Structures are given as structure tokens and as C-alpha cells.
Image 1: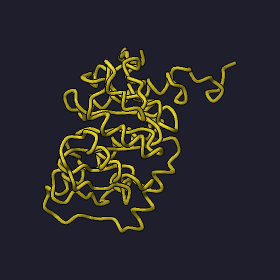
Image 2 (image 1 turned 60 degrees about the vertical axis):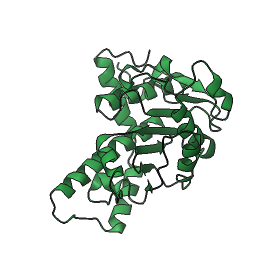
Image 3 (image 1 turned 135 degrees about the vertical axis):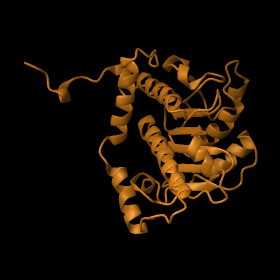
Length: 258
């Protein structure tokens, strides 16, 4: 007699509510971001708070390429302790400046992903970096993304604190960092990576639509808001996305969860 799928135990190393599972999820997100060419050299950072107070935060080690990230490689730091930067394995100072500030100030932002993906960074380079809801993907971010028009240099501590202040509205899930790149937040790795993926796809669609030189078919606000809410209520979509990413990596023999 076969066991129903719903009765099968979840392997502890893949359970998103265990530290090992969270490490594996974050490492898989790094690997897939590199697969999609969303990374940039050994720059950019993802972080995940293991506790609501953000005293325990996972973040990528300095200088490690996304494509080589493993669960065991991720640093565990205290985002509230400045002595973190005195550690011999201290994270990149811009990672501390940006991610540390967000985790300290915004407890709802349990996961933070910042990178310079091609299309979102082009969007961030335009004088008008708004992304209108012109399709189902861009509608996901209707009234849910902000534009940072005050770029002041690399994201060391002062710049990180300034950026964190722009994300105070809990409804905001993404920030187009003018002259810089993209930052996405969420409650879990799955939710945050899914938003990252779809923001980059939406930005690509929008920029390609602009290239035609023809008028845009912009959704009415009411329809865009309805669609955004439908995305938010779509059952287990982000979790399914990350589960399949991990399955593909495992089928290839990737050691991301080691």
C-alpha cells in the first residue's frame, strides 16, 4: 500500500522552518540567480533573518561567487552587533551597511536580496524608473515598489540606513535603486526569490515594449491592484518555484545544500 504524498515526511534538510532548510533555500537562490545571470562578479548579497529580532542573520561570505555557494558557506552574523565587522570572516562592508540596516529597522523584511540584474538595472538608470502595470507580471508590483532617487554612493552604513528608510511601508516589496540596481524583500527565501525573478521579467517586458516606440497598454489601477492581490493570494506558488529549482539543482548533482 503506497503512502499518500501528503503523509510523507518532509526531509529535515529541506524543511523551510529549520536552520538547515533555510540555509539550503538561500544557497539554492544564489545558485539560480547565477544561472539566470542576475549576479555581478562576486558583488551583491542575499540575507535571511533566522529570528524575528534579526539577531541571527545568514549572509553570503565576502568574495564567494553565487554559482559556488553552499549552505555551509553562509555566515551567521548578529545584525545588531557592530563588532561583526571585526570578525576575521566579516561580510563585505556594503553587505553589512545595506542588509544590516534593513534587518535592524524592518523586522518584516526577513529576507533581503540585492543585486544588479540587467533589465532592472537599466530601469534604475532611466530618469523615470517607474514600472507601470502593463502585463500580469508587472501588475504584481503595482503600488508595491518604490524608487530611490537619492543615490549617494556605495552602500556603506550611511547609505544603507538611508535606503532602509525608503522601505518602511510594509506594503513595499521592491526598491528600484536609482543609478544602482534592485532590492527585494520578503518573509521567506521562496517569496523573496520569486519576487526577484518576476521583477526582472517584468522589467524586461517593459523595456522591450518601450523599444517598439508604440503606446503602452497600461492596466487600470483597479485591475492592477486586483491582480497584485491575486498574486499575493496564489497558493504556494513561490514555494513551488523554489522547490523545483532545488530539484533541478539536485538532479544535476549540485552540492548547494552541503
